[in-house]
Length: 236
Ligand code: UDP
Image 1 (cartoon, rainbow, N blue to C red):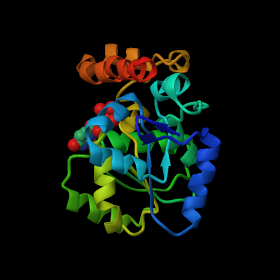
Image 2 (cartoon, rainbow, N blue to C red):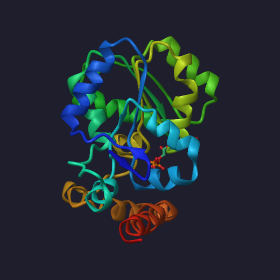
Image 3 (cartoon, protein in one colour):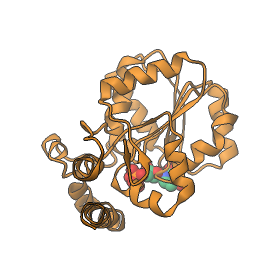
């Protein structure tokens, strides 16, 4: 289904994982995007970003915003969200034999996230890690040397989606690249996630806002600009 011209696949996490398994078997390269409200706001004014989102092998709603919007203006209702952090854990649980590379976040954060993953899934094959402030060539060389099959890219949106789109072909071992935003910050414990109940009722954005007031601009776009766009679409 489409919201503001951006494709979102109406899948739950188990179905998304089946699709990922199929991608890993077909020998081709794929990338996955995890839009939330701010992605759709951004895509409305950035045609190249929209094109990248719509070219993804899978597009899953990371946020509650697109799910609510689908009920208001969508041609079908999204059945739920698939949060990036949950998808990452599911990949380590269900696809543990696949080689994974963690690229992004500040120095040391992805390393800490890897340690958390190994505590939970000791056999996880994290074959390489680098922070998100190295130059492109350095990152690509490290990824190629690791022969990773799954690449998690945490550079924030839209940078990570553009990076994947521009560079995927240069990393032939990578079969699946996923833009995961702030996921390493959460998994490492650098940024604390909201309690599960707050996540469940869709108020994690409010929690994050209080935890990091610098996110105000992003939150403003996600909540108010997005809601206004949805209401305009519905009533005008
Ligand atoms: N980041 C990075 N390199 C950059 C810009 C950002 O590694 O050049 C990282 C940043 O450290 C953070 C993540 O990208 O870990 C972005 O997190 P944020 O929560 O802002 O992303 P969002 O989920 O909103 O896309």
